[in-house]
Length: 120
Length: 111
Image (cartoon, rainbow over all chains, first blue to last red):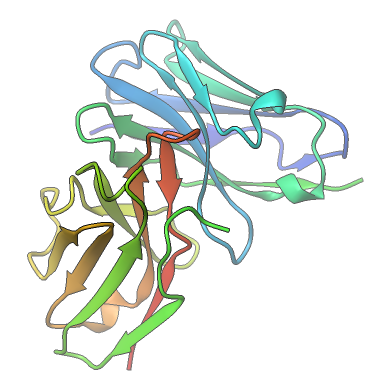
């Protein structure tokens, strides 16, 4: 059974960089045809796709966030990471990591989510 | 504003059926069968309920079904149960600038 777990600071100051890690257990992050994905959800609002990294290491980013995003893969630790630079209060949200199947493009496994608050 | 349009809320009584629509364009829902649906209870992560328009993952009740016509996908829940009360989101592949688009979500209330 694949499991994903987000980790990182719950509070980030404005203008700083938000950094999160998603640790995957129950399967290798470098095998199979999957996109390892970040999705966020502001309180009381809908889901927003942030970006993804394929098992090969290629990335796709939400155009509205692209200039501030970096998603990377660490196969030795079986985890992938998200960095969002120059954060503002608008980046406050629950951040989820998820696995997207390349075959059906659905998100079949999700982390529990982690709340990140941007505040001084 | 979300790329896919869903009604903000729907409601139904136990035992009834409801349908949630998800309207996109020919760049996403209309031209691709990569529509999926997610159920989210308060404080929980979304759960995959339907993939590739009408397929159910193992363990998902057959009371949940999906379909598509033109640019609109639909999720139908039959035999409504109290536990079905949740938010539901649709998602699709998109050939536009972002490869993944979500609907704004629909709150299902079981009366």
